[in-house]
Length: 123
Image 1 (cartoon, helix red, strand yellow):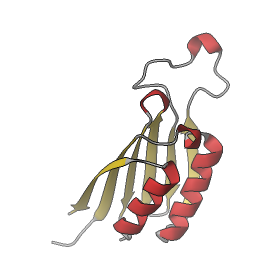
Image 2: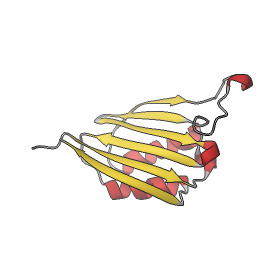
Image 3: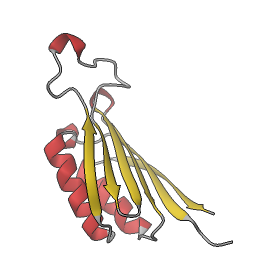
Image 4: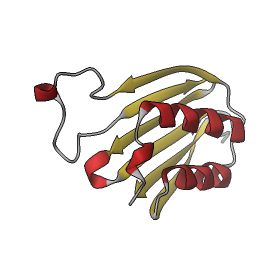
């Protein structure tokens, strides 16, 4: 059966939380897409930027930034959790990509001390 797509799932722990902001994430998406030869499209963020202090997230598993970088062949999503020093990244594309390059770049960008990965070939 022919492959429909590929998904790399990265669970990063003990990260450098100074990378968990919009400017850094924009840079990460640009560098990652160039490294794995993906064409970037729209980028969307969900976070506490511009939210009144009393409405900001303060629970460890919700305080952070989420983003979706649409690519021509699907999307890349990230959820960062400041208080847990964790980031969760999913790279999904129907175009093949080098999973080792994506994993190495991602671990280095976020300064992750630990990384758990899963790679799925969709059929």
